[in-house]
Amino acid sequence: MKSIKKNLVAGAATAVMGFAGAAQADGLKIGALMPMTGGLQAYGVTSLNGVNLAADQINAAGGVNGGKLEVVVGDTQTSAQPGVAAAKKLVSVEGVSALVGALSSGVTIPIAQTVAAPNGVPQISGASTAPAITSMDDQDFLFRTVPTDAVQGVGMAELAAEAGIKNAAVIYVNNDYGKGLAEAFAAAFTRKGGAVAQSVAFEEKQASFRGELQKAASGGATHLVLIAYPESGIPILKQSLEGGYFMKFVFSDGMKANDIVDAIGAEYLDGAFGTTAESAGDAAKIYQAAFEAKYGPTEKPYSDTAYDATMILALAAAKAGSSDPKAIRDALRDVANAPGEAVLPGEFAKGVQLLKAGKDIDYVGASGPVDFDANGDVSGTFAHWVIENGRFVTKKVFVPGS
Image (cartoon, rainbow, N blue to C red; front, side, top):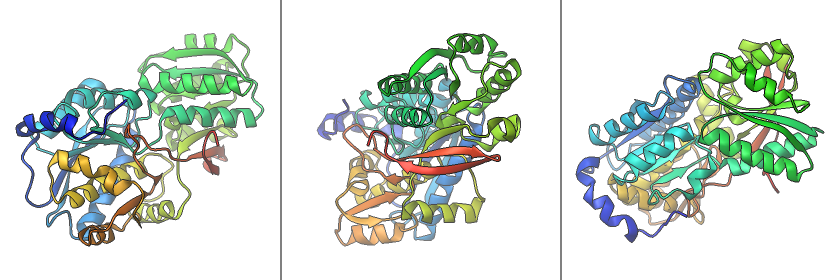
């Protein structure tokens, strides 16, 4: 379990401050580690829009500690090695005080292990959902504004059971995200009385997935649970339909993208359903209106969680009165967790005023409550969405396991 005792990390953080960069007297510089290329490119663009929306609102409200919030982007390429290289550049060359990202758990984890934690730089991911992150030894420098797949897997299983599915096959991307979610779904679905006929891993960038599909279909499953990203998910769906392996699908959050409907055809996906972390409260509505006014509507997830990560970091810097990375880390729970007066999306100025008055604040995120536990995790709620006439339609927002 991660430790939240500040004295355990003080020495390490002090020792590397020369690498992380001296704290700015005014303003705040953060790094946005986004997949601007690779399998999660579509989500990277949307997530960066969330970061930039927060930065625009914060700067319009007067900035952070008397200066502007600056966002420097690093392209992770949806891959561990370039992701780590981008993180090192942001920390050692750009001197950022904090990191937002990455998206893929398989990129976020090595960044935390080799860059963020060793150099005492707080990192908040808005999309990395692998259960393994919960128990990582990251010296309390890795946080996330999206719930773990230990929760999403339960939600997917509940929806599958409610739909009357008795026998399902799982095909999952062979990384931390895919393995963790596949295991969580299988365990929960079995507890619900369902059967997982086959659970088959695949490697990204394969030319063909017919072998995996044939194995998955060999157990007589009626539905395919697909845990993937669009880059691989689209050819898997095409080959499944062409070969007659599966015609009915359940999707993970990584598959919620208009690109999939455009590539496959709405008529072939009608009735397919899945889950994404989502909130239905006033904070979510405020954020959605602001996002759509600037960027237009989107069905892709993670922009709200990236927005929340940016807002929390800026509020923590304001609380600390500093852009020192460790001081920001130490203030994260102070601004994100109850108790305190609620601060909603777009209310950065209100949050700063309350902090200056010595009041406790509780940032209520666009993605829902973002109270960090001892592991840097949040609980959160999930949306049950269904593809209807080519559109992603939210049927309900629920708490898995409740």
